[in-house]
Amino acid sequence: MRYDTLIRNARLIDGTNAPAYTADVAVRGGRIERIGDLSDARAAHETDAAGRVLAPGFIDVHTHDDTVVIRQPQMLPKLSQGVTTVIVGNCGISASPVTLRNEPPDPMNLLGAKAAFVYPRFSDYRAAVEAASPAVNVAALIGHTALRSNHMDDLQRTASASEIQAMRQQLRESLEAGALGLSTGLAYASAFSAETDEVLQLAGELTAFGALYTTHLRSEFEPVLEAMDEAFLIGHQARVPVIISHLKCAGAGNWGRSPQLLAALEQAAKTHPVGCDCYPYAASSSTLDLKQVTDAFRITITWSTPHPEMGGRDLQDIAGLWGLSLLDTAQRLQPAGAVYYGMDESDVRRILAHPLSMIGSDGLPEDPFPHPRLWGAFPRVLGHYSRDVGLFPLHTAVHKMTGLSAQRFGLRERGEIREGNWADLVLFDARTVRDVADFNQPQQAAEGIDGVWVNGVLSYQQGAASGNRAGVFLAR
Ligand code: ZN
Ligand code: CU
Image 1 (cartoon, rainbow, N blue to C red):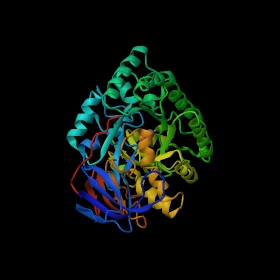
Image 2 (tube, rainbow, N blue to C red):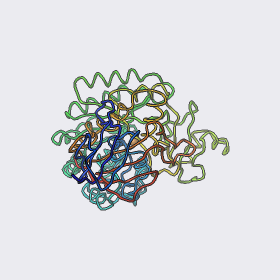
Image 3 (spheres, rainbow, N blue to C red):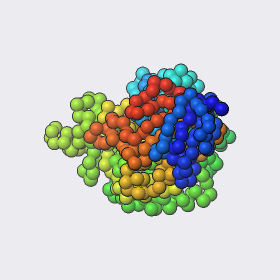
Image 4 (cartoon, rainbow, N blue to C red):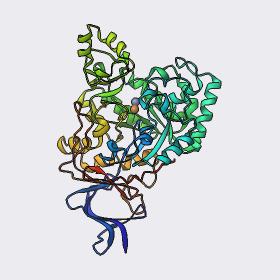
């Protein structure tokens, strides 16, 4: 029996949350064909994996990689972490279906300027991804704010009945073309004025498709529990699974409340499929939001259109330099991006460790000085939080980025090392794996990721992309 690829003597962590065991894995035609003792088998490519862990390729369930998968299909920030699938379209913002008359509203500008939005229909976007042939698989959500920007002249109000009809129509067409579900970003000014009923009506389109609802909550600050209730209500009424995006306790007045949030999540999970994603850092990042400007914690500027030279500097320092208040300084920097050191480490750990949480990077690939989660989220969970801090066993860390994620998002035949599944695989050294990217030097590849296979194709090895780009579009 001759295979395409044989990976021998690996410590297999299969993604199901089961402990590691030693086995050989044989791949043919892009799929995992056999697992076991394959000493007699031969393959065109053989790798001795002794001493290392073989896991399912990581699934980044929370990304803003919508346009970068097309413009920079090598996807090195993700591939170098062992990520083999990205889910785009989170936080209410998606590259499609979008027809812009003006510059994109905040925070759609996180995906690029107006010229990046050239996909009036979801099927156009899907075709562009397929033509670009990215190195990782791509699945996509449809952004509520994107739909709003297509049909509303003013985002500071809730949509009218006819606008909702138009949005529903576009959402339905997108779901027919393979979108996974709907995302909202209700905290942002561009969607905050949408009443619950507007989202409820849109979510009504999801039911027939078995699609899902993900949400950047209306608030991550003091009213976070009310915002979670709103999300569960929407999911319940539409009878669709709910994923809370980057669950956190934001703002100093909110620290220490993670047990309450997790209790609410558990309570909802008793009657309904719910979960959350999170990234392994106590700092968040997005566009610079005047409402979040405070002296209670550090804020750094990552980009600024009028003042690009301020990228990487503290808001506090810039304010000193200019002799202005923090708020006036922030105003003068707009439009801009920021990192907010606004979480408490114990909340971050509690949410990371919870069985209902998955790992999502929330990385911002357009940012010239990005939050390090873009390059470091997955190895940081494996190295720092699992191995060094001991927050959970390695097989649980892997489960939160593979099997659980595939199951929640309905990605069939992925997320577990199992005969017949697609061969998305990552080989890493559990003793050395670590995130190198940090807040000072955020664009650095992780260490300890030895090999990454996407659909059976070796795509990353010894710190470099192989040049093979074998990702496919994953339709629901
Ligand atoms: Zn978000
Ligand atoms: Cu996000």
